[in-house]
Length: 323
Length: 250
Image 1: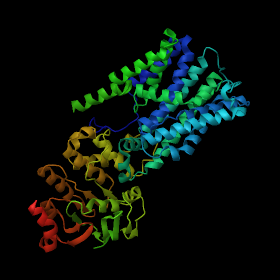
Image 2 (image 1 turned 180 degrees about the horizontal axis):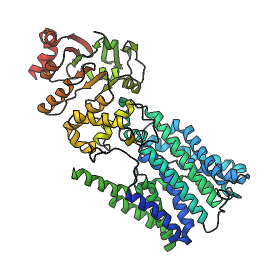
Image 3 (image 1 turned 60 degrees about the vertical axis):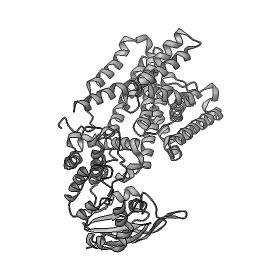
Image 4 (image 1 turned 90 degrees about the vertical axis):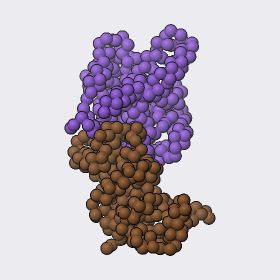
């Protein structure tokens, strides 16, 4: 392949290898912060699923937590009722998220951005209240406890220090990331980018837009469900807040902060957001949200494409200027 | 000659406004057919009806003899009908090559391919590169379309349509908004297209119409005013009065 005429491929870039090496290094460098690190990985996975629909297909959502929460409850309920095998629970969580996404796609994907925001918000609120009302199953506001997990692969028990949780979360994140990377670099991914840029044009190229959107929304729902299941398994608890609006809203902020449409943006945004939240709430337990808000405002002005988006965009412009 | 694309009393109205009124015309295989008429004559609406971007209020559309009046737009494209737009409608964040490749992958039925990278589809890449070179866009292959000069965007519109491997190509003012020297370049490219591709094009420049078209349909106020060879149209008194005369006074 000559230098001119680049096409989406699956080659790994050096910066990507550095990113994953850093994620592995965290295990050794910050052994006492692995619980927070696991949360970052799980939230990063959740943000990755939002990036697939928002960053690549242009679907805005304020109800993505519905899929996350359904995955968390699916895995949590399985373990609660005696099926504590982690990997199958994870798959069940993914299936629950995908099923909910598919079922709601027919209303969630209609109309323009504002319609989608409102409809997904509504779906999220309904999912929250269904779980709240079904307290005999979900535990309601008290949450679902007694989520007893078995050993991972029959070998590694989940420990209080979060070592197993971190390695498990990192392995799942990496596997799902590789799958997502394949998807966005495939002809299907290219068609999603076309839909994001100008969906009205796509039928004139022969593309059935609604079907494509339903497909990627379902896949993203599955990934969100896996992320929810991971949270349920690693914390051994499922709370109503897994379905809450604030989880969806925070996720959107993280993705915008990291940069939508680059795959890494959600993960970097999740890390930046959660680390900032942890540090700021430690420094000022009462007013920490003020500083977080200020940080977000500054980020919008100084890194408008998000952290990854700004860096990658600058590189892209350099390449175009060199032409 | 056989008609690849044909309409029967095709109409479209919005309330009392009839944009297209009972238009029956045929596009022959391999034709270079111009669609002309004053502004507001219904030319773009007719193209939208042919491609399925709009549903007709009445009448029928046939492609290769099959009724396609209710067939969705994307299915018509797969059956060999491609178009360009009067107002450029490209994908701002895709590069030139990616844009053409997108159309080539859609045509190749690859866009449900989830897991193999685009780079592995050598046939579609080669086809996209060939079209890009043919349209003199090879120096801009890696440029995002948002920063592409307007004239190049018009060429890219045609490249995208060609990547769909059409048998029927509908061009809505392909040279709109670009200097005359560049519009001649566009028509030179079109003149080199294989003869088995039937082309229906909307164009206001009568020099280009008479040089390029072998048949001309004239629309006025949504109705078909006349149809014939360029010489017949040039000699048609009604056309001269309604359209060419108007152009002469403009």
